Image (cartoon, rainbow, N blue to C red; front, top):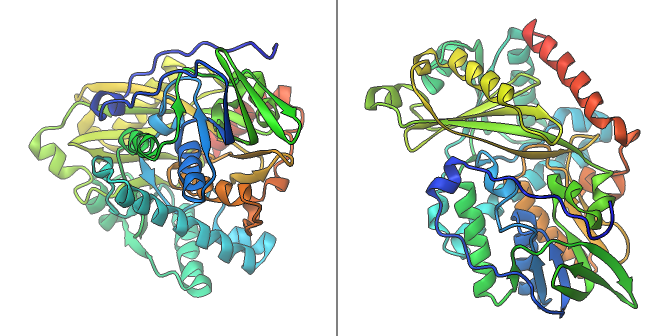
Length: 436
């Protein structure tokens, strides 16, 4: 791929796009500009970084290949959680209690920051509510593991936010009899992800931060003590660059260094038509967000009397109708009463997976910073990584636990990553099927 090459963007229809506040006016960059920092990507990470940079007196410019929220920040499920893909007991066993405690603190700081950003910038239509979350166990072994994890967190971290649920209690919470029990967790919640993103973009523009849509970064070059970022109609000169492209880092040569460190994985979501009053009252009546314990996890929540149901979609960067069909079958399997309810929206987006299942933040070199690899749980964490990118840009060295950028190396045999993901995912699906 030549530095000027750029991948075309397919259209994406979603419930969020159909119900969002108007998109902010973010015209393309049409001239050469100069800034203290150039942020590549106008998702949660990039806009949070820009807002925090501006608060610190560092003048940023944000460039976005499409429009703010076009990528994962506008396509995700809107679940706001303090969790990582790795459990805290596993982190402690492998890396020690101090690291587990720091990761636990970062997770909760991330959720708190989402609430803070919404309040500070008046993004009421994000609709963020800390409803809590139900982890619904699909097998006795999974239930035992979830209960043991909750007890470990209470005893070792002083976190008593998780409560054990019987099968009957999970059925009351979810409206489904498909589970053997579970855990109810407080503190997490849900929001309208695109309204949250567009609210951040509007806040950035009110703060005087230039945000340019339809402005892909074609190349990043070192120049003296700074960097030059080439775009189709202008160049940004800055002291530092922040790469905030996450699962879409493969789309241009300017972010090739990140592309080789991430594995793209498509996450698919469907949303039903509004349910009847009786059915809406019976399914997820507490309106908590819910997730399964399967390795190929599926999650679900109620939004405006619609069931929004998500899970892993097609492997790699291309979508698949078969993935949506499988997702809809899974939804009806959990909620048989939805068999005759039409699906109104089907959409997907790319998750950036890492080999160690956690995101990373910090420096690629003395002029380029990045945050990426949210592994499908990025609403809160991507927002938080923007805060820490601003701190790194100011020369600080915050303690990031397992999220340290130095831990994220190139994916071995990167060209084979998609066949390898298919193989691992197939094995996980087999284990889920036999209840392991």
